[in-house]
Amino acid sequence: MSAPKREQWNSSLGFILAAAGSAIGLGNIWRFPYITGQNGGGTFVLLYVSIVLLIGLPVMYLELSMGRFSKRGPVGAVESIAPGSFWKFMGYLAVITGIGILSFYGVVAGWTVWYFFKAVFHGFPSGKTNELFGEFVASGPHQIALLYIFLALTGGIVISGIKGGIEKVSSILMPILLLLLTGLIIYSMTLKGATSGLKYYLVPKSSDFTKTTFIFALGQAFFSLSLGMGAMMTYGSYLKKKENLVKAGFLVVIFDTVIALMSGLIIFPVLGGAPQKSGAGLVFVVITDLFTKLPGGRILAALFFLLLTVAALTSTISLLEVAASYLMDEHKIPRKKAATIVTFITFIVGIPSALSLGANKSLTSMISIGGQKTGFLGIMDFLFGNVSLALGGLLLILFVVFKWGIKNTEKELFRNSEKLKYLRYILRPLIWFAAPAAIALVLGFILFTGKTLS
Ligand code: TRP
Image (cartoon, rainbow, N blue to C red; front, top):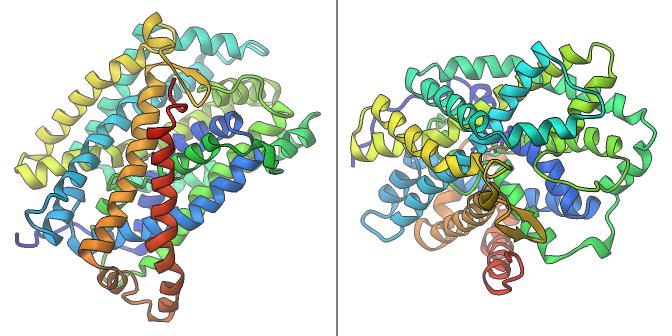
């Protein structure tokens, strides 16, 4: 296949902002705190950060290198490196995973839109944000309408090519988000239970370490860094040869992790210890309640949810882009039609998730994952947001080691950063042994212990 002419990022900053835009989203602010709360606080955080550095960063490098080398998304990248091989199914897995994640992510992203309008027009009832959340998510029509709105917004942006505009907007909004989070951290530190909350959040206790901690920390790392389904590969494919991949990838990983950790620094001091009941509503309940107590809280709440909406949008764009660009590149379907098809399929797949927070009884508490009762949305999240991503990451490593070759990978990765080449002595053992072993262990736990799902 001849190399198509490809759009490129104008600067390494442009790439870093876009990749950080994909990485930073609900995963950092919504998912990270509640998963941390469910899996033992400080122990989880320590494990999470270690996994980010020892597995996430190397996998990030593999994706970026492979994307820039092949100038393709996942299906095309595999096809150009190993034409006609069975590895192609890895690309298909990526496309399906993207749709699977987007289908439930869109539901939660819809909440941010509703909360934004709620802040603007009504404000939140102090002390009753829990009830508010419960009633809201149990309303089927609301959930479906918001899912539809958010996916349509995402599809519209992918079609119209104003993605560049969104990235520019988010390059202004991200610093504001950082500022707002910092302010909220400072405020929540002054609250009564702050010390015990921080202790739970930051001090590891070996007794908290279980298999589930490990499973969820790995899944969260992949999810938050947008790894394991070719999103970063696709973004890397737009990256110029002269850019320094080592630096760019590192910065994206650090940004993403800092934002997640900051989110926890707000939530846990407010909770003052282990959360009684940590679920998908945690942030929506806790942060809104915090805003009711702050002077100017409604304006800040509106700003916060607006920022969260934009952060979610830069993530959903990258999820949709992988599946849409597969249809465009490999089936020659025009952009508009491709994006419309994927948006529509995702909406249909997302409906049961939208109805699984109270609207429909049997969809609401179907199964227990890692000891927590959850509904359809939780199942989708676990299967696509944890298992599929980990599997995708493992396959990518195997592909690089056995097919593309570690030397070729390093050539692409260290292009223009000869000085950093010594890092390969750290990278190689991680890619050869540590990362695949850890991921295989996690997948093994899930498959063979039978305890994760019950
Ligand atoms: N990383 C994003 C978040 O934290 C979600 C996301 C966007 C994603 N693209 C992805 C997750 C690709 C996995 C794979 O909100």
